Structures are given as structure tokens and as C-alpha cells.
Image 1 (tube, rainbow, N blue to C red):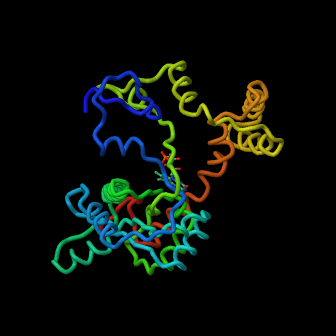
Image 2 (cartoon, protein in one colour):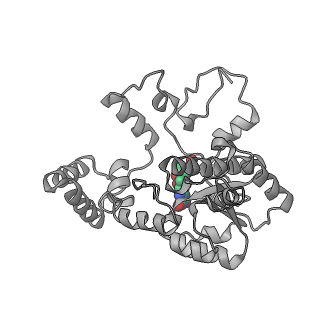
Length: 303
Ligand SMILES: Cc1cc2nc3c(=O)[nH]c(=O)nc-3n(C[C@H](O)[C@H](O)[C@H](O)COP(=O)(O)O)c2cc1C
């Protein structure tokens, strides 16, 4: 793989000499999220192969504390689309809901007369969250290798309780992420990323200096300049004032007026993932975790 030519959207140097990447790696680097699907079923053998690959992924201690709910019914997909607020979810032939699952493992431990405390242990939360995502990503990679497109849906977090009811999810099972799969309609356009020269640190963490950092982000988001509107300014002002105070809010608006646009960072944290709203509901999320039977964010006391 050394000397490989990285596609330009990957932040790689275009002049690295190479014989060309092998197909798998090429497809990994040319992938893009797919939100538009052909009206074409995924053959059972294809979906089964993909799921087989997913369940073959690495998993802490080889425990596999996850489950995948395969959703193909039109009414359930529509409900998912409504709950997650994204129409294309209904148009994907298959939606997969990846969940942390300690229910199955506790049942097994009980049956086998083994001690079990995973649902009270932060370590087990950590590992099962990782395992679930590793499985999901393996599924996406296998799907893409077989000509399918995929997209993750993180907004399942807006509707944990509905999902539990809808799919009859028992306690000790927790939805993590949804993946939509289908044959892509049209060409996918890879998005620019920060490349290894920014995100990889050799042996020790290296802080980027201000210039490097600005160049890297400017390059990544060169196409992302949001027009100024009075509504947007009003929102950004309110967000800044709440999070960092009135003086900072004025500074932010001054910067916007000077540059003539809303930049990518301001758009991300002032408009899209609003910094004044993101920490809301932390208590509610903890409560939902506990409703699901998990006590992994609490001090554990042996009875
Ligand atoms: C954890 C996670 C959650 C995501 N949630 C959504 C989502 O709710 N809706 C969506 O359209 N895309 C979602 N995405 C896809 C990202 O928007 C996408 O990966 C990102 O914009 C980069 O584009 P690319 O995947 O085409 O490289 C999510 C991706 C990840 C990894």
C-alpha cells in the first residue's frame, strides 16, 4: 500500500507515486454516504453475505454484545423516516438498526450459572458501544464492496423510546445507530476530509499551529460558505450570547460582516449543531439509559 496515490478529496498528496490502489482500498476512499436509492430490492443472498461479514467483525473478548434489527417493512421504514426526520430512510430497501445488546449475554450468563455485572460497568458500556459501531462499519464496508450504498443515521437518539416500543426492544438493549442500505441512484460524490497529515500523529501528539489548522479546515470546507441572512445572524447571535456571552456574540457577528459570509465552524456550531442546545437533555439521556436497565454511569455499590 505504500506509495499509493490518494484521491484528492482525502487530503492526500496527489503527487505520491503509485501503481494505483487495489480495488478494496480504492472503493474505501471513493465512498460517500448514499441518500438516494434505486427502487431495486437487495437480493437475500447479498444482504445475508453483508450481515455475515458484519457479525465476523472484531469484538472485545469475542463477546458480540450487539444486535441488528433488519427493517424491510414499508410501514416500519416510513415510521423510522418520520421519527428520524429524514424521508430517504423510507426509500432505502433495507434499514438496519444497530443496538448494544446485553440482554442476550445476561440470559446466557444466567443459564450457565455465571456472575454478571456488565450492565453496571462503564467498561462494558465502552466496549459494547465500540463493538456495535465496528460491526456497523463492517456491514457498510461489505455493502459497498457489493455495489450498495449506505448512510448512517444518528438521529435515532431523538427517538430512543419510540424505537424500543416499535421494535419490541427489551431492557438491556439500546439503539446506537441506523444504517440505510440500497443500490445508489446516480453517482456518489466523495466529500473532502482532513487527511493523515492532519489527523495522524507520529509517536506523540502534535498540536497544529494556527496557520496549519486554518489551512486544513479551509481546504476541507472550501465549498461551505453560508450566505448571510438576518434570521441566521439572529440565531448565531443568540447562540453565541448564551454560550459565550454578549461580547463574544458581537465579535462573531463582526467577523461574519467582515468576511461577508458565515464560515463552516460558525455554521456547524451556531446554526446546525447549535452549541446552546447540544448539552440539553443530558439528564434525559441518562434517564433513558437507566430505563433500559443500564447503570454504567453511576458509582457501583455491591448489595
Ligand atoms: C454516527 C454518524 C451519524 C450520522 N447521521 C446522519 C444522519 O442522521 N443523516 C444523514 O443524512 N447523514 C448522517 N451521517 C452521515 C454523515 O453526514 C456523513 O458521513 C458526513 O457528512 C461525511 O460524508 P461522507 O459519508 O459522504 O463522507 C452520519 C454519519 C455518522 C458516522
